[in-house]
Length: 217
Image (cartoon, rainbow, N blue to C red; front, side, top):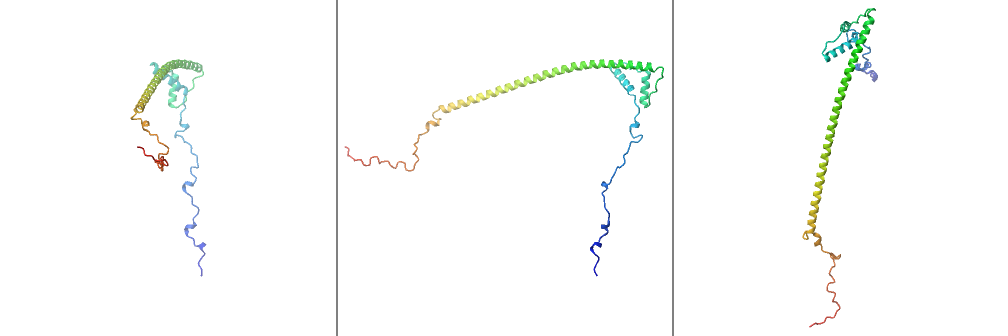
């Protein structure tokens, strides 16, 4: 007789479960590491920093002095091993002490030469810097003197213009006040306090009232 309740009258769309946006889902949950051949630490070759330093110093002195670099066989072996990315083979136990001592003496001599050259270059740079600073200070002082001179000249011109203006105003004022035809104060008439009243001069002619008139022959 009656239809179904309203609670049963639902469409198919109402039966869906919860929906989540794709960007709200968890992503990148695993940490990735560099593999071999991807530029990680494992791909870097073993470097002999001492050999690289000696080679750089030798190249520097060669470029500076124009003399060929003195590189012994051990250094050549070091450079070859650095370029190939392999470790240098250890010397034998008999000549190890002599090679290390000679190498140490040579490094000390080169460092002393480098320090001497650096000190000379620093002295030259200091002298050049002092000369440049002196030139800069002289130029700055000259600019300051020029600026002071310009300010004094401008101030003097301004004071002279103000003085001429005041003299001109004083001369015009003297001319205006010294001429009686142009001085308006001389033409001001003295007026009484009752000049503008309404009943002025109403008693005129009443002075002789009550006097006996006599005939004068």
